[in-house]
Length: 516
Ligand code: ADP
Ligand code: ZN
Image (cartoon, rainbow, N blue to C red; front, side, top):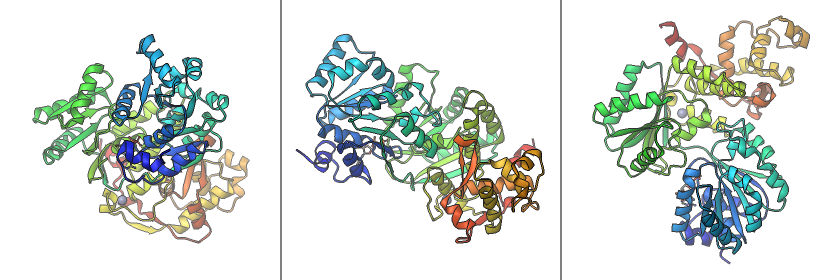
């Protein structure tokens, strides 16, 4: 029997595993569960494909992206791996043939949507000896994630029904809370969590604040014209914006197209195809574009509007520079977008979470410290160094020794038992005597009023800085309570100093609002 390494060479033509791939494969081969967090393009697929080749039977690969299954299966087949997909577009005979292939142990990987797996569980489990379950895009299982698919939540029962088959859940985007929720919903058994670095050093990060619409499109046109033959994606909030941006580019002779869910499926896939084949330079698209597109030479990604949350944003900019070469990303941020997104986020059952995620996105856009650090902190990595490849690093803000300010805030957080949110914290620091504060006894704690000299609005922004710096964390699932991180403890207990940003050195969006 071949080793994972030999299979890597034989079927995929690669010499070495990327960090963690081998460990993940071993984990699955040993029959244990895993949760894999790897950025887009990181190489998640191999982590279940190689175990699927080594274990007897058929691996069931659950993916929400029916449109991509065929591509994935074709790619495997062209590498000499026997794989198939199973969905309702197939005739009864086709489905039967596939199930037969699984039954004889010929088909090593079977791709299926969660709906189909749930509706045909009996048929499939009767036909297949299941070697493992791979749950791709596993963040879809969590309503805390940014792409919730209710069908996913029902898969937990499979884990109970097949206690000895290993599960491997994979995603490119999951903050801590979503991670916990994935484990809970899928009922993973003591999974090992593998997190590879999300750092994409080759992507430059830039945010442009308060640029007016007309200037914006002209700037973008100049940007593209300075980058002949470099392909890129412009993400817009609405279908209408996509078409408008496209028209403006088209008028300047730029080879562009638009892409959104309101278009015919055939047209959409032709746009996608042409973009992949370098037959289109620019696509103006909604977030519907790009899921699973494997195009390595996207040189830039522009966000025409503010994204809804950091997960989505990071995934979208992550479509640039998959070949590892320097690539540019620009985010345009203005108050009107923020207002609109706030309105959207405030609707529906997930309003609170969505609003909070939007706030973190806003916060990133208004950042006054290294943007990459903020992004990586969001995904629970804590890099020591500023990146030197973002606009804040290029134009540093002024800083001051904020240790005492931070200690005041952290001490109040601690004394309130880490169960209060931002507004309560600010009120306590400012010495408010409102009824809730008296009732909770917070007027008695030592730090009550310890920050009265700092205006309320400034406190909010300092606390946002602390969130961005990874000193504080916000627990969405506990009423947005603020918690002190290990890095925060070091500051609270005087082991480390910390710098905060002088607030008036930040070009704030509020200024844009006032001039309206
Ligand atoms: P993901 O699903 O994480 O977005 P993929 O599994 O599609 O990423 O892998 C992205 C690309 O990286 C693919 O072209 C894949 O063949 C390649 N790749 C994966 N593992 C390796 C490796 N060990 N060495 C070289 N290339 C790899
Ligand atoms: Zn930076």
